[in-house]
Length: 192
Figure 1 (cartoon, rainbow, N blue to C red):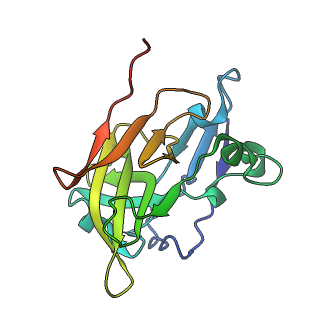
Figure 2 (cartoon, rainbow, N blue to C red; figure 1 turned 60 degrees about the vertical axis):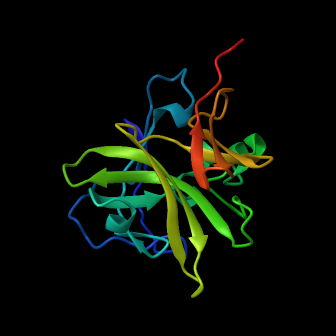
């Protein structure tokens, strides 16, 4: 048995997908093992053809669907009575905005889940920059094939941390490399 959320409301952060005939919930949280936190048991299903008005195939040409994670995907049972307590207490978010590369233009980092044309799923991180027309343009994408679970962000100084767990202490990091003029993923540091 799993806790499931099955609505896919159109919101400013995501465009609702055209019906695909898929009745699978957007989020399934397995009830077992009971000694594991909900975020370790969560599996997400993508349902959108656009992310922040960018066509999914413009993010990655092999993708069919993708969805930005949003708190409204999750129930009070997993987020806490006020709907956000656990993530806020941990200092985590599904999206962050700022000027990550210090070029004077607003940037947006967000995490989510994708499905490729072969049906394989995974998590992703995308960094977008604001365009002259007020839309968004992809400037960085990192995908983790085979995973479709929880992923969140936290900003520490000039780095963004990627957390697949709210109680772990070895996140990956995303940093702007000024010399290379590009973003780079920094793997977790092993315990010393």
